[in-house]
Image (cartoon, rainbow, N blue to C red; front, side):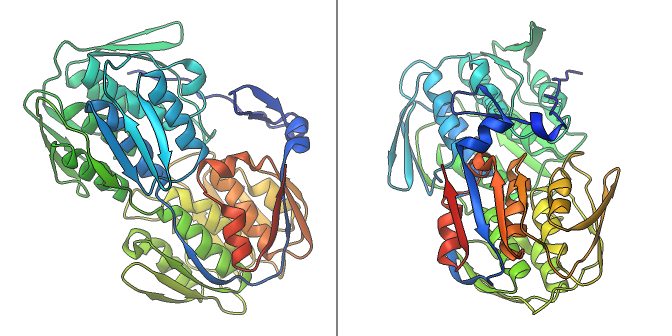
Length: 450
């Protein structure tokens, strides 16, 4: 088995670190001076908001563009810092990119490199999906430990075990992984856990492997279906995506494609939770309600009136939310771990006691100390959080430590009394396009100061 060490995060409030645009460590006190989000809470959100393309779908799709020589057009591509880093990785591999309104055009013509610089890998954990794509295209790949939000140990042994079954030789030396494969050969791969990243890496490697690859206990997330649809648009033969068994019939070459990325289900969840927490009424458009059915069920149990259209969800919150039954994060179609922090913040102002069990990542309760500074009553034991609803949260100075935890603080600030200042908002830019602008259009008093 192969494990990459997690990057330890500092617990001391004064010594928290972040990263600037160059991937260099920035001291927490420096971040405070750089930028912050200020929210004057207490206003119920009203209106409609359009959902951008999915972060967790577009990143593996962009990685897949290296598989086919030519010019790809990826539409509904959100303007996120994670996308910008992915562009840097593509350029380091020899591709060219250009933004055209909501589309990112990737020219993957010419020779593809096989080395991804450490500074780029450390900026983005999902950069690990380049491993399968580059290996399949060039026969070798060299990477370092991936970065991203610190959510606890996330070993990539499942990825490596699967790629070795396809024929890759794997070497680890001086903090780098090197994979070689003169020829990838299809086989049966059973994943011990339905890992999204491992499923994506096998798909990306398997489309150019010789013969048939079958993945059992595969991840079933909608983003897996989106990747399969893009690969098939490029001439791949992938079937079964969205089920626990995916079949890939290898082909010799792929061709470039034009493709529209699915909407971001976690962004949709964020706006719905914000509306619920503030007692508002919001319509979320350009989304797939089925993708967040587990979230909608929980919000309905909290007392929200929810109406679903073909590509819309309308939510009307009660004057006071009620705590729902126990929530347990699970792989899709269960309650998503990415929505856990959002619901955690929402339940802080619900009547009664809520219970959340986190089964995917061990450090998803990072926003709890910050929410407690705002008056939340949350107790955590191991991977279980007990939330005792309060009459109101109060504005405070808090600091985001990861993407979804930062969004949870925004939700808390929107429903809190008084002013909330959120430091280190750069994490939000990883997964939300124009978050403050969209919330302001819904009536929130929210501004970012740089």
